[in-house]
Image (cartoon, rainbow, N blue to C red; front, side):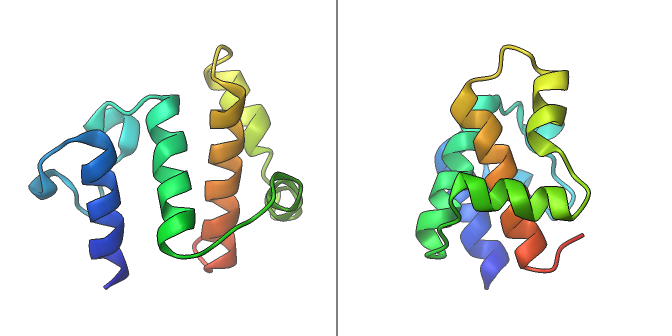
Length: 101
């Protein structure tokens, strides 16, 4: 089941209790994730599901969907690591490609 795989990745990166992860759990508010945690989660998802989306393609996918993820992240967390900004963008592109809106 995909959710169980995602849950395992999140638990591995965040070191949290698996019972804390539900479909409604948020990375930042509920788990206290920072930009580096998000980056590590997205990279692990790409590896686990054998998905590789170049940053240029991810940016196009998200912008075509009406999202400027990179700009939103920089607007919220101006000192965010550059790789983390792109990780958010790639994560959003993966979700869009999977049909999550």
